Image 1 (cartoon, one colour):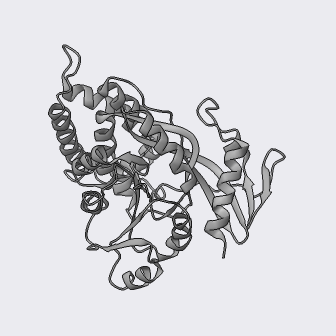
Image 2 (tube, rainbow, N blue to C red; image 1 turned 120 degrees about the vertical axis):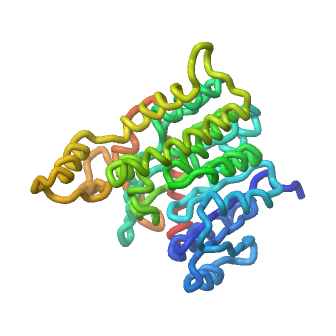
Image 3 (cartoon, one colour; image 1 turned 60 degrees about the vertical axis):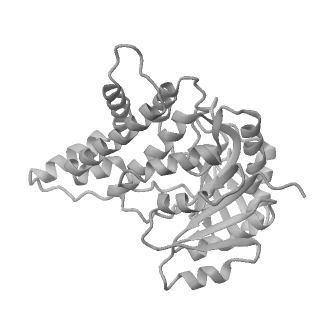
Length: 356
């Protein structure tokens, strides 16, 4: 038999309810599966019991960060490519083949990702209602241009198909800093500096409204800033130092006459501005002044409409699937294309995930 080119790595922690359907999906793919579990001791035995013999189950310490776990596991992967799959989302194996084929055909690309689409599941209905990550391929030849285009419309590509060597290097960089937001952003920039990152018109991941375990004030740059400006900028400076150090290690030179630190700060000012909301910022200032205004809540997930519109598409599989107009005609139209064939493939995979 031909050795596999790709390994699936699924880091998980304290989410037994999310694994059963995902394991069923990966059990139908030809790629070896590694489950890296850092669950608390009271939950780990139940998660271990869910894992079939075909998967490689590894127990890791609960106190490890995601990037600690990834570095430990990725150093043991023998295949040249890896898919890192999140435990609180649904990763669709049908997308692996085109993403992997793209990387094989493009030596200058280090990562390939499809769309990340939002959904809610209620009894027998799966409501596919928003496109979350969709920004196009970052394909500039200049690594600093790739850095800029990543940050100006930042969307995470941390769960993608990767070349093993660049992603291992990027994970090692992420471990140099603290705070989930800066760790993820450093990983993404370390990847972009090493090569191009593709976006293909396939749905790789479906994301529910389930919250991250990270508190918003450390997972969201705006709410970290609101909670503790001093801490935010101390961690930003450590992050910037790690990023510029990596840039210099790669022998990437800024344009003549440009200070690298100033360039990086300017690009990140673009990123910060896109994340900030003037109204919330003014509200926070009034709270600090002692005004009688309501306390701030965290970043809320906006409610989704339940009624159908004439442009929504309803299909029946194991469950009833609603494809919202906001997905099928999402803006920008030039960047988001989900074909009828792709819809069919997604529903076939979800039938397996949700099936008995």
